[in-house]
Length: 441
Image 1: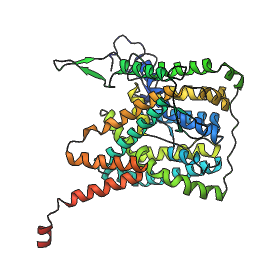
Image 2: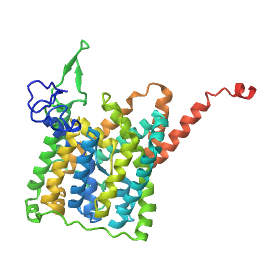
Image 3: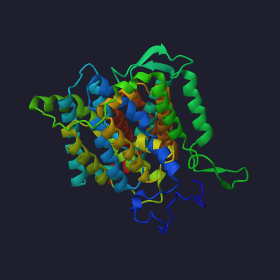
Image 4: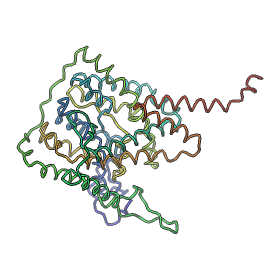
């Protein structure tokens, strides 16, 4: 990270200046520009899903913006790292599939997952699972999720999208070379981020082996610049979207959920979401946070699990998209400069302002956002998450990790990959047992 010398936007260790009253969890660890860059690092995942649900399933975007802003505030204060708040992807995928779940059914699914995660967190079962889960299996889940993000990102960049049907509805129509959402624009954004942030390391190494501070992530908010460019292009692409804006927040309406809604939501959406929430939203997040922030105390899986449960027990009753944490979002926000809870607090301020000022009409702006740019941001998030698996120290560990990741990607199921990884790991341990000695005794 860049040196803090001479930067008035940094908070010193002694808490001097006007920022000493801030809680330690949201005190700046780098510069404000770096944290702002990290704040938008997860939007490559967030925007396509909420946009698709708003267009196809009539999700109230204004309500979702307000509640996810409150979630961001809470997680920034609670955890002290750029803890992401992401839509539950499996629930969104089912809602946008041929099933086309209604809003009450989507909210039922979120409430069901929240109840189970809250139970696992409060009872300590989540901590027990985290403690005994083999590291190669966790790395396999992270690798599969990271590569899945990267594959989706490349589709966003190469092909036109139709988010009125799905959050990843790639068509067979290649993206045009020129234009305000053309391939050249996406490639230019890609090159700019690479030149600005390099491989994402905090330090470069000189040829003689000494470290030198790099001039990238902390000083050039690459993701923020690219995202701001995308917002400007929204109005350039279609100036008439201004006429569709309506000022004022969306009214809060309690969602009426029937027993039939709950049954459909639970079996159709909550059941496939649950393994992903346990593995990626809790276990992988805790492990990744210890990798990215080794100087901090390890995140408690119980606290993270309870956090997901409480968030959805509040917002789902009012029609906010079911949300969770995610290792991909944490990787993306870290990749673009987020180092403290201040990063997601900045994001919360932006979401809250948009939700209160424009309400649900903000969907008209997002509908014109260049998808190629979103693909570029999502690509870096996915690669950062996948690179967390590079610490496998033996061929056996790599074997388990790659089988777990391969099954997850091929079957599009984190649960199936997880089970395969566990079985393979146990079989390899069984080979080490001295059967003859055991029988002899």
